[in-house]
Image (cartoon, rainbow, N blue to C red; front, side):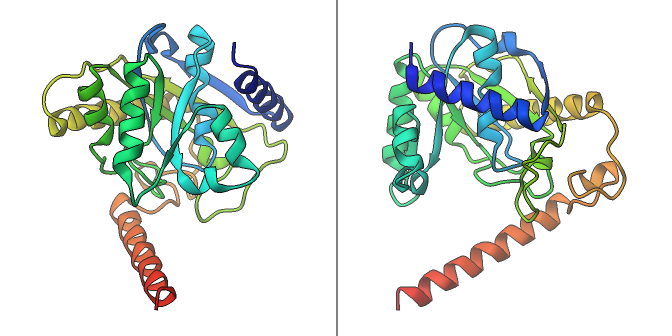
Length: 251
């Protein structure tokens, strides 16, 4: 029993009900009932992590320990909650510490939630992956569970207003079969990328209509989202602007 985590889950489910969110979960049986595993998640919106643990909870009442940026833990409001739920702070200036903590969690039999894309995909396609998820799985000797969320970008995503009222938004979560920790990090990362791209395509096909021109619909499906290449260019520009502001601030 984890009273803090159970309380947060109850609150989250009450909020989802108030919003009228309609969840469809497929493949929850692919989450191991015991032992460690890397839960690799695509990243389309700010609230992905609140939905990503649903398959593990529904299948075996398991909890996922998410890797999240250190700033969330520094907050006087969210920090105590994140620590109580045993999530893992990620300090981009000291990434080795968070990586080691994640591996130790995995070796202890925990489920660790990771975003291989590192940032929100503005195109809502699967971006290029970092190799961290693969390296963790290989070192800990645990499988990677590809997990795709679709529809979360309609609630709150980068560059668009939040829609936190009663929107009755459908959200689909698809979980693919676990990938064994075999090969080198590059090979395993490529295998994971293919699995998540295939799962995303499957989940999108079952999701329902994707209205032409809508901001949350990928360009590939006739929507108004930028292409993957356009989104990558936007991310690069944003990173350059942030770096310039930091340099100016630091003198």
